[in-house]
Image (tube, rainbow, N blue to C red):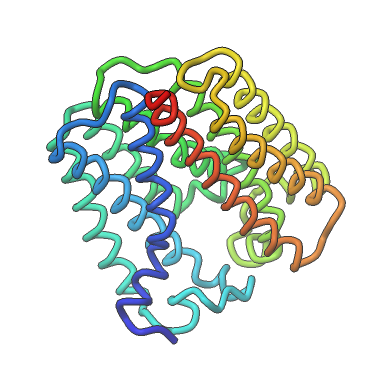
Length: 290
């Protein structure tokens, strides 16, 4: 059991919001440069609170699935929060997130509104549809870069577009790994049509590996072709570590079927994605300094 404030932090996975903040700021730096303080604050508040709403409503609809999958640290599973608390938290955080985007510009408001509504649709039904739910989560990981781009300019930067594709494919692979890990609960409770259910766990792991290889290819292209990543040693160092971790995990999912590996892979992939975000954030700063 958690205290109520801690339970809300656990419910909304605030630590994931830090990754979104890094993505938005990195995109702003790559596309043009940081905006004024007010716009910067609004551009941070928007993804943070929409992300919090997304996690809260997802846990609300996944209570029984999480019980089957023995996710006893989830506050709705262990009784730290009631289901009605999750609904209230979702409503408040969603309003704050979308509301903040209104003060930036129409592009950002449209992105925030669409993804806020998609978060509700995903939690309710979309996640049960073959690959559609995975694709939504992957794109929600990538959209902060597009959002950050439009905070400072009204034209999509080529580098931002490629980073969006990179994050999308790696996020899609990570989500497929998640469906392999949660196969039992998804089938028993929600009867979700996931890729492992349709083609099996091993074939799904191979598909995930292919998506990761595409992401790795894009990361290499950025180093060889586009500023501020072109021949940027700091970017190269971070992205090599990232690519190695993700490929190691991908190969492991093909050959291993243990809860201990799944736990390791989930944490390691999160670390890898964080390193990639740092690479995108620090590359333009390092490039400017030299």
